Length: 152
Image (tube, rainbow, N blue to C red; front, side, top):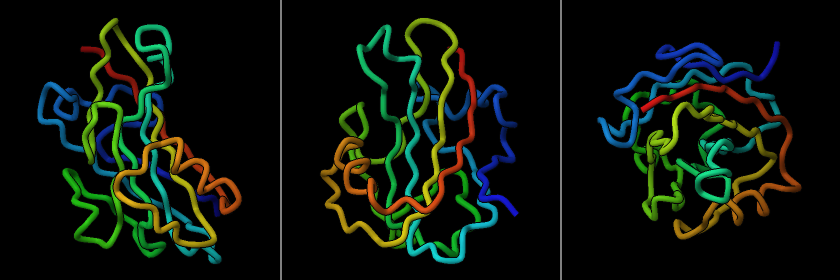
């Protein structure tokens, strides 16, 4: 059994449907979580765009969610993490919540990184990706990644 993240909306490495884009519906795609390690106390999700380094000068963070229950197996489309007791941080659009793909210069690859953690983090909603990564640093049990591409 392997810790995994998939989506019924797109296969790993395949195009993310247009409706999940920032300039479209801007709703997160549905995600399925498999084989969470037994010792997991919380999950964290980071969605980012490493191809944004050239146009934006940095990896662009699209969605940050932490303190997700380890019993979570499905993240539905247009999910509200607060209703599940999880916390969303600030993305690089300057917003809390999901900010869909919006590449300014052609196709980009997006990473949906899911982390199994040995404790909840308790970070404030004002936390950004750097703060999240720093706080997670000594707590990661396992990590899985789902990739998707998007072309405007």
